[in-house]
Image 1 (tube, rainbow, N blue to C red):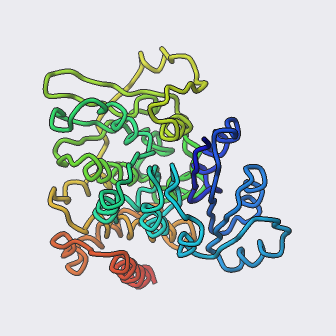
Image 2 (image 1 turned 120 degrees about the vertical axis):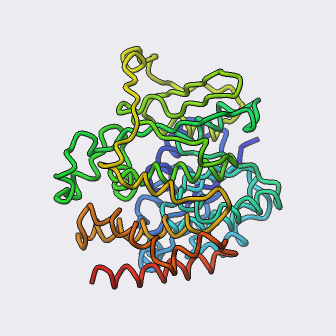
Length: 386
């Protein structure tokens, strides 16, 4: 029987990679739904290749443009409330890969319609993990993290308990600016900030890699997903990105999880979990293994990492403030409204403000409260950079 699946964010890099995997094994999959924001031409092409009957395009103009095409049996919708019209039973697998805070609402809304959800959206996990976790339990839906680091941890902990872990190290390539002197950072251009040496990613996440805010987020994600204290998590710079996580257990054993710098590997494994399926990969890279070049992060060069010290193990919404504010600031940088160094500088200033620092004592109860906080941050940041 064909597995029924849905892809949220099918025109992004994660979605496209998943579709390439499915295209080679079409006989085993029935793609029920694809979603995108604006890229209606790409999603229509994907739908025709995979014979998908349901599409969601959230941008109104793009939705109207898509409506003008010859769609045949394809139904198109403009919002995620349409899930109720699309699914009449639980499907087998959902990939949630919509980038940014916009991915939170559809991620939570679709949980009840699937047996398994793979989440590649940092913002959804950081801002709404308590809401996601609640619905995962309520609707008996299993979860797999897709970030290479978190998938590596997930993979290595199979058959083991988190209580047996002494320390987890996430690796960081150092991004495109690892060899750039700190005194040059203010003048960094967008083209330089998004020119990642190892990974082909979207602009926003590439900038996060350049500031190393992506590692701050990954530490927060790991804390939430695996229910482990911040003191048991650390970051090691590893320029080649061959090792993705290192786990030291209480019994003295250490697991080093490595794979090619290719997101196809965690995506493939999330789709074919426990099926012993083969994927074509490069041979074991002895040069990289012999030259791991692991080292501590230079906090003077990447002050974003200092933010982790401000976080408490008790569940709070300060992490949500951080991810939402960073999202807005990176967008301002990409619009050339602020300097590269302003991203972390203004973020640190924001989280020290009383009205936002107070979120460390509370927990946002629902999606609407997260949206209101996002609007408040947007307004404050606009005033700061006016």
